[in-house]
Image (tube, rainbow, N blue to C red):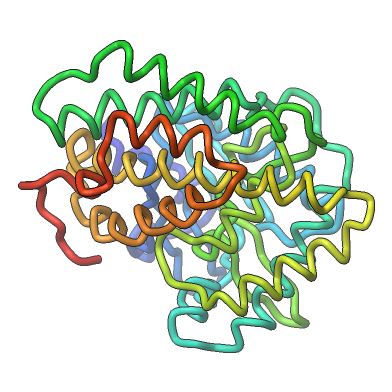
Length: 329
């Protein structure tokens, strides 16, 4: 049975007409989404194996339990990776921010939802998004994808070892800091404005246990769009006011470390998406991501990584590898 036939059977079994399914979105992974129109609107998540939808279902139940707004699940076929879920509409924060629609209010609501998410005891069984995992993902995208695309040869082992040691040193505030539920991609494209000033949260299947600064970096230093510095500062202050139990000095050091780690990983991930997955359109975000990395590296808390990168990758070499297409999104 083809994938389209599997989808048609699943929809019919749940009293939806396959003809009412329209493409909605595809994320940076291999999932895609179809909007089901008609009298009973819904969204179909199509996540074919080896994608695993069980974490999504388990985490959705947890987030709903602690009072956050996540899509209701109408039906699921865990074996085939198909889920029918509530349609939250089109008011993605990414679209609203891009058109300048009350950024302070939108970020306020997103910060408030994040605080709720982090304060609740996390569900069992989540993987660790700790300093070790954060280091290994950077080494993978940087040295397995970006370096050979940029320089046309494998990276020296000494470069990998040096950057690994620098990441470990920089991420010490993360390793020794508080732990909580981490969405891992808590940015405007995965948040929606709902009625009554609520924030809808989606795409949380990659959640883990990590440092609370990580999701705040994802929100305020978005690799896909420019957020005015004044808005970022205001949202950061709101977060710290809501979390008086956190030591602001050590939290800000961890925030800088998470920013440097995330921006280096993501800048190189755009290259992997282009080369491995045939999605060169993501390279359009490369210049912004490298600029965000430069800002993070200028902070004292990121000095170990800044020194290592200066040793192996001159500033002039940092950017999308020459020759890769940068189709606009």
